[in-house]
Amino acid sequence: MKVPYLSFRLMHDQIKSATLNAFEQFYDSQQYVSGSLVNKFEIEYAVFNQVNHAVAVSNGLDALFLSLKALGIKAGDEVIIPSNTYIATALAVSHLGAVPVLVEPDIRTYNLDPNQISRAITKKTKAMIPVHLYGQSCEMNTIMEIANQHGLHVVEDNAQAHGATFKDKKTGSFGILNATSFYPGKNLGALGEAGCITTNNEQLAGIVSKLRNYGSSEKYYNELLGHNMRMDELQAAILSIKLHEINAWTTARQKNAALYLKLLSDLPQIILPVVATDATHVFHIFAIRTTQRNSLQAHLTENGIGTMIHYPVPIHLQKAYQHLHFNKNDFLIAELIADTTLSLPCWPGMQDSEIEFVANQIKLFFLKHV
Ligand SMILES: *Cc1c(COP(=O)(O)O)cnc(C)c1O
Image (cartoon, rainbow, N blue to C red):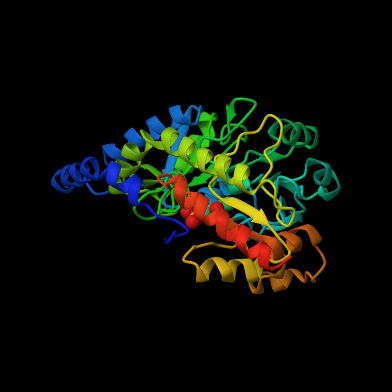
């Protein structure tokens, strides 16, 4: 048996005829950017995400960047982000000349630890970006309270958590502006690059909507120094189709996770994902941890099982951030996660027998390596 880390097989079989129909309509429409399909998807995604406005953009990094830019984040400002996130969260801050301030996560949930935030706040702090890592919501109520006490903006990075909730409220609806990604491998993925900003603030929705479109809302009249960071019509058409399936696909991921949790619960050598009180987890990534990560990964590869490491190098040890002069041991929790985490296949459409195969191979490995 072979189990790839991610397969679109079942998902894309389900929507193939609808997608090919949509492609034909798109092709015949002769309207390839800035047509009605992006608008239609924005309205649908706003409803899904329980917000008043969704502004479709080119990708997740641009969604983060435009959100921070619209909030006036500029050179010298500080923005708090988790020490164990994907590089995009940090880059969005850096591209505005602002400084990403790293805060260690809670080692149980891998999400921003509210107890660590206050001590990172300085006079220069303007915003924070909680990342719903691996698909689990951060403790949004506490995070919003801390932000309000200190007058900080919250921009959620919801790239991994479409449909997750905290106390029944969707991630991507707490912050003033929130960013998500529809990169193909995300839970809601386009067939190319795409992303979105979600907000309840009409004025800021207007600003990001102009910023993504050359600073313009009327062609050839430019009010702001904008960018070309639009979503194209084809991606919007495909995302509208996939949005109908996202809840079922999330349930499928959660069922996979539940089966892994059951099958792996008696292995003392591995740490399984934990879902915090009041949070839900949409299992974009099913990450386990073990001190024998590298040899376990090699064993699974040899046996036809694809895995990934999210992420092998924490931001403070990336070459791109050497100008911030971080050292090894500066963020011990981020380093511990980087050294021990392993992501198992968890895609919608996996058969129980495939999950059992992965779990059995993990058990076999630990029988040999006690
Ligand atoms: C994927 C991802 C992004 C960036 O999204 P792109 O569409 O690839 O630019 C940002 N943050 C997190 C946490 C991500 O996983």
